[in-house]
Image 1: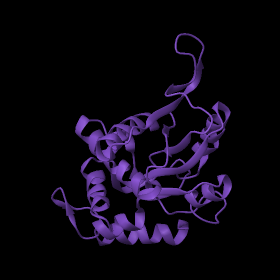
Image 2 (image 1 turned 45 degrees about the horizontal axis):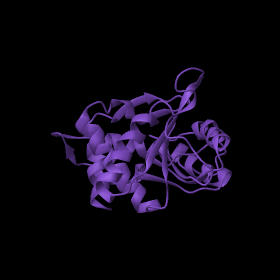
Image 3 (image 1 turned 180 degrees about the vertical axis):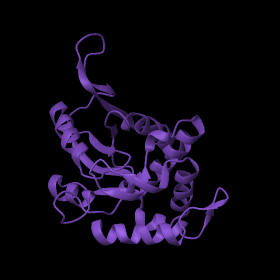
Length: 224
């Protein structure tokens, strides 16, 4: 596993973005872990987060894209932080773009924030995590309605590796099959478990035998 991935896993725990315990997800599933990218709130956290995303994008998609699109609302700071980091790490000037939840009819009008989209733009979509793929159902039509863009791929921070809506693969697998563009994550949940099992982070063991057993049970039921 690349060093930046191990650092990112510990970073999620240190930032209290990735937690372990008992959680009820929006889907109704009872999960032993929960991720909330909204817990990245400081300048140093956002700087590091953008760097981890930039490294993962560069690894999976190289430099062959023009725009980083972060769907509202959580995708907005992700897109901005990663655009800045990409320039700093790789010297490539990319544009950031996001959508508004409601179309603005005065001043800076329209549904987009940041850069406009134009025909031929190559776009990477950036999100925190994808459990069901519902956000892409909303995002993809918005992108295609603005211009004849090519979606190069989707990047998320964590691949939960559990069944999507059809039960025939993960949500990321289903997105690839439905929309025809590749998907990737900074890390997968199996990499998280491998890295944190019986290891101390911030002075405590995050995944002990009990949590590990509950994670195994969860994936026996919901794993893709």
